[in-house]
Amino acid sequence: MRALAAAIRNGSIKISPDPEKPIPRPILLSAGALAFAALAAIAMGRTTGVGLADTPAIPTVAHRDLQLAEHDDGSAAVIDAASRETLIEVGPGSGAFAIEVLRNLARDRIRKGAAADAAPYVLALKADGRLVVEDPQTRQQVELRAFGKLQAEAFAGLMTAADAATEGGAK
Image 1: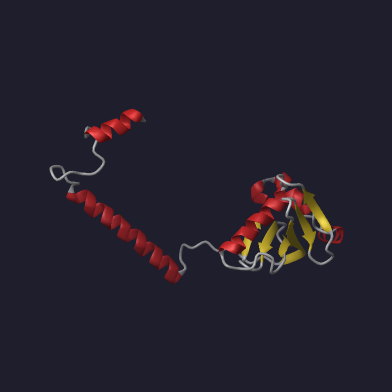
Image 2: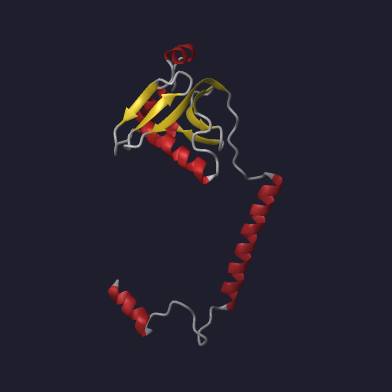
């Protein structure tokens, strides 16, 4: 790394073109055409909807409202919003996957200007068997299958027994 820095300083390696050897005109024109084509494709996609990915709206068959409780000592808990029952509790400096997901959603709320604890998060079992955590404030969804089977099972354990028995459990 030092040799590279020294070569740049003494001029044996040039980072920018010099007046004696400018960037060839065909390369500049090609770069401009590529940038224009990319902008045109983006504009066409946004105006027509062609090429844009959209998540289909899958109905929710069971859900549980969750809240995150952060304590002054650094501990945290996941609480059922309706019954105020503590579902998961961790000590200072440690974290469970469920708490970290809710912390990330809370940070996203703050980043987007919504109140961090205005509405509970929704743990939802979808009709296709997916288990997701939704934030009704920011419309953000966390697909729990993406983090692996064990992580999805951590949240599946938070669904009420009645919901799991009625719907056959989360897949």
